Length: 355
Image (cartoon, rainbow, N blue to C red; front, top):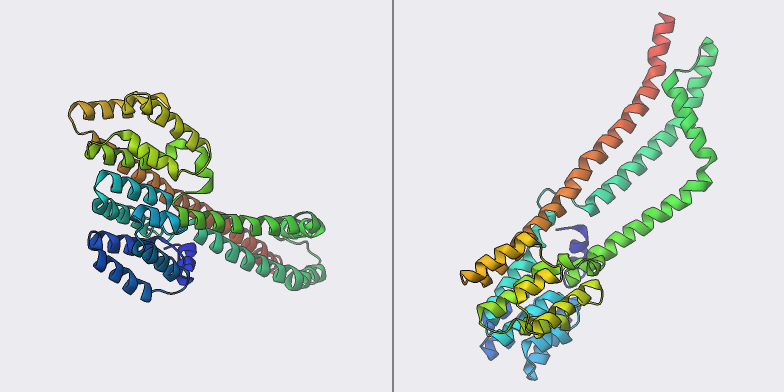
């Protein structure tokens, strides 16, 4: 669980762990009105703050006769948009319990992603900021209090400062003279970067996607394939899934692409061909779906392709921080090594000169 998700959990906000438990509750109680309402009431009493208020709103809407898809859409940020779309399609295709269980499994995948190695972008940023501040404080202390005494000692013995220490002093003097040009911009950049990272991570945990992903349609293809598989598995027109998907689709280039796909399908074009014509699938992926269509396993192929894309994306999401971590460790290690050499070289020089 990342730092942002822990913060959302502690402040009783919507996050994957709570959403998974609520989806499991809805899947187990669906079709039994009294049990569903009693379960929601008990679940509400076990929670506090904003999340308990959202569950209370959901229970009230269900009591007044709203269908589940309308109720979850009216309660803001209760579930990610893709989950709301899946619930809407599940109601229309008659497989809502299975959809709820599948969404609970998919949403829960956001919980262990940040636990695999204990390395995440948030932890790297926090670790780097703390280590950088400690390193800067140590070097400042040594430059202010230790280096002047070393200068006096070397002047007294009539010898020159070692080259590493002299280079460190030059670097520190240069940084001090031009501090006005980089200190404030650097602090502002760090603060803005931290806030931007928090904002985007929070947006992903609440809405299920990063805000910049609306400009990259292929990142939304796994969700699209899952929605289409629901229609194919229940022998319903694919246009039902596409119409429901467009209701919850955020504005952007992805919405334009999906709108083009819906237009092609409504005009009678084969959905698999339309996916290739709009550029959402590559040629080898098209061949895989055509093969599955001929063997009457298109629903399985769509879900398999969506799961494979999600696994590949999650693997890269874990690998990038893992690759940045060693680079940061080596960088800080080289800086510390240079400082150690700079401050130990005077002792070695004095011993050699006096022996």
